[in-house]
Length: 271
Image 1 (cartoon, helix red, strand yellow):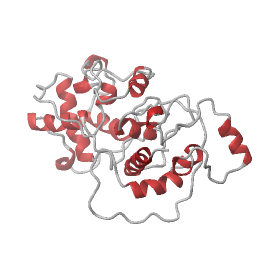
Image 2: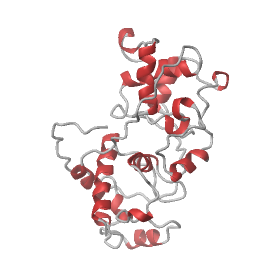
Image 3: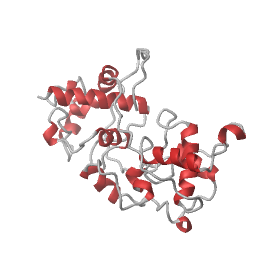
Image 4: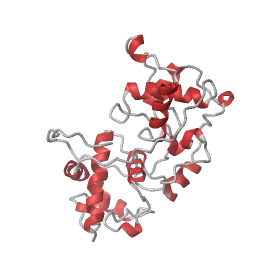
């Protein structure tokens, strides 16, 4: 998502967070049952070809829905830009992402339910909550007529939109997040130098040294599994199964984009 042109306010007084743990990708998330917000004129989804075309652009682009559900909802057509690491993660998801083209197998029966699951996530699945910075209410509503089209209730739109790959934010803000709220320096080192650790207890150092999968060297592009910004964004957002890279639930989507921009500077600087 392109960075806004206005200057962001400086973050102050945000404490550092250091958590070490191995978690599943499909994080248990409690989705609150919220009321369908707004007036009918604001929330009622459209159902014409133009509405479905807008939803299709979001599904295959900035919404990142196609990463798990496949381009246009075809589960065997994952986006070509995905790295092998992300493809392997999607293949081993349990439960597997639903086939959005098989209406008879879907458990959600109303657009209200679909809206709430897209916004708030789905319990015990890899369907995580989306902040309003990631997708606005209007963009989620635009997805609904497109989801109806691939279920076969309305004709699908023509043409495949280009995916939105602009997932970098502000590198300066990302650097602050890396060393503070993100807690990234605990494992990956100050400025990405693995041998330069911030002050920490002897017990934490011992636990870090005993990790079964050592932290990645963020300055060595040749050894990194993430191959593109979408992969990096999802790794920060959802974590890496079998490692101490846990989902960053304390970070906003805007924060993660800032981190992605800062990580790019580490790779460019190298060792």
